[in-house]
Length: 222
Image 1 (cartoon, rainbow, N blue to C red):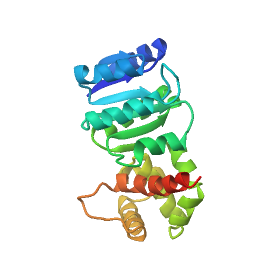
Image 2: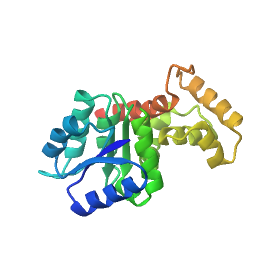
Image 3: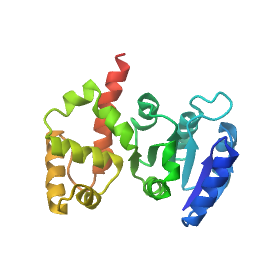
Image 4: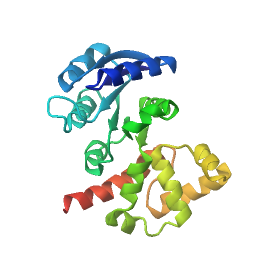
């Protein structure tokens, strides 16, 4: 899988490139700012762009702008944003319309290569990755709590893990449940949230959308 790295820190660019190659990824290139990122994408043709949320020239939301532009121009390329802090509004901007092939992780995860590598692979496959801390923040918002009021505590726990990108088997291992029990809980969740349960829909994307649409409506009312 080809990865393009975008970060203003040369140390981080070099460190990520080395670590990703050691994990079997092909590093297509590494750039330092938004303009270089957008110029590199059509040339390098990465499978996933790994993008710092704050880059030159303003160090505010260049990563979000770059990710949104890539999603529009090159929809087959995945984008994984790395952020120093959890910012729900920036994450909503990135994820709420079409979260497929999109991810949002705290920058601390780059020290946990197993987690980062798995996130890149999932985004490259068309899945959605949401940092657990962002999931917890969204769960605490009033609009989300009202939408999810019908779920049991266990169902809320499983929905949060779905939104993080875990498979049913991964959830079963995390919670010490059988895969069949997890499947049953997921069916109940989808039923209570009026989400389609057939194989034509990505349950994890739909689970994330429940969070994002509800919290997005809350954000718009501020």
